[in-house]
Image (tube, rainbow, N blue to C red; front, side):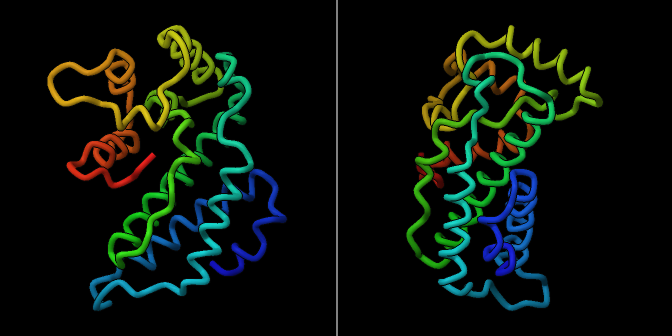
Amino acid sequence: MQAIVNLFPTFDERNLIAALQALTIYMLLLLFPSNNQPGVSLIDEKLIGEVNGLIRYGVSTGLVLEEESNRVRPLWESWIHVSCKRRALLSLYTIHWAYSAFFCLPPLNCADVSNIPAPAAKYLWEANSKEQWESLYNRWLVQWDGPSLCQRELFDISRGVRMGPRVELWLEDADEFGMLFVALCKHETPMLMF
């Protein structure tokens, strides 16, 4: 982990995403012990601070494509990169929250990611080719009237049978990762604050 933290300012976009994904896996391995390990170990405070710095750096490199803001289909490769980066950063925020809750530490402020699109539709991730993804993304653009659902809107889901039309539309196509954030945001005591 320390090697990634030391080198992250030198990474290009592709290597930054790989580093964020690797950190996600390493953090999970450190925080959720095996059956042979008696409990969760306290991670060096300096390392946690450096991981937080990497998270903030990842956020600062951009989480929304210009095409997404303009409601046009982005390049497939660009969409994959930014979506993977968003997922890795949201995962790291969530893992940091779990660590903070376990050790009664202050969590990261998630305001940096409150305006990014909520996790993408499952069918976009399941596309088998660039051509299929382009067709599905065009369908998704037609389906949405206005900007895509933002992370912060997951907190506005009201209890009851009916939800807002934007949330209902998003939920129809949400994948497991998206549903995780609905559960985290709608828990009696919200676990992540945007």
